[in-house]
Length: 426
Image 1 (cartoon, rainbow, N blue to C red):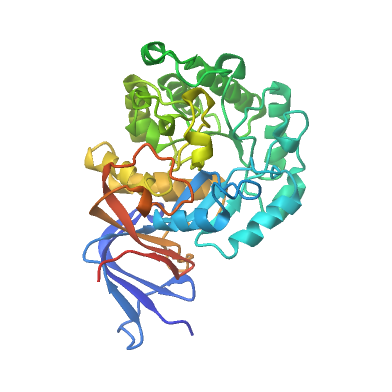
Image 2 (image 1 turned 90 degrees about the vertical axis):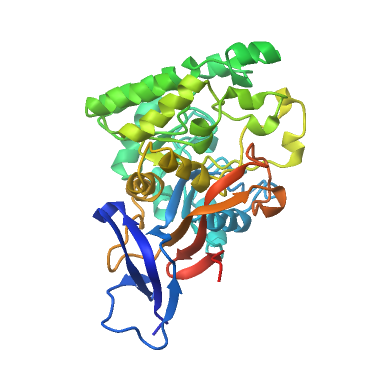
């Protein structure tokens, strides 16, 4: 019999079961167990002194770069960064080299992940090679272990192909994740189009590049009656489109990322390539709209879009720099700021970062009921630290938050009852 672990005197927050109370959580054999009348002598007891006990955080949008670009990140380093950030599971995008459009690539990812520090849920490609010309074999991909499909990094330009993807994926019970970008408008753009791009002399990407494609995805969801998930929303217009679609009863879910509710286009000042991403950072009005969307339920999830790049891709001229930033180790403190600001409460935060991602992807986790898998994160919401390159676990260091004082940190991460990260002061 495995040793019992008891997390004592914590604040247990479980949105799935509407629990927010002080108490203890008992773990054994990889599951949450019912408390016994007395504490066994051999039990491992951890006094949390009021720190939060929550369902393991789930990031439904990361790039682990393996296979093909392991010098930026691999599954071992990416899952270690995930555990450090409090994530017990991540869903990895298919834009690897080769693209995850076959069962063999999916099986390779899962084999590598079996030795990692967090669960990995592969996401398969919508189209073969993410080329937008023909659908991948969803039945084969699902049998191998994918939990959703997307061509993330690229939009599906052909509307008929996207319609067929929604229909085909629905028949296999797979969510379709949309990278919503009208490339005729965004092509050659490197930041948000507006006063800042004009001042810096950089080609801009208008908000319509996102909103036009979001509108199309919502129209196709209405036409087919099938679920679509909108990834990395960055604009006020797209947020309102999703809000209105939900009011009409469309099957749509959506995510945003911490950089979109924390930063604006002003972060690009000085041609900071660590603030270059796609979709780009937008205006203060857009940032506030994203925050309101998190508050009113327009957004279902917070995801990082963790996109590691080495200095080879980032320490170059702004126009030539790769899009994307790392986010697994900063997502929690940046998102906790929403709670400190009074925008959302702790229950809503954990719903956004655990319960809802589990529900959307149809995977285990996101709850703390007796018998549930013991994927658990313990959070110290008061822990303060400064983000430094030396402290970053990810292989890449491309973060716009380097040097920032941050508050709130995962101190324990359990995956199936196994402790994969421990930063609890003793």
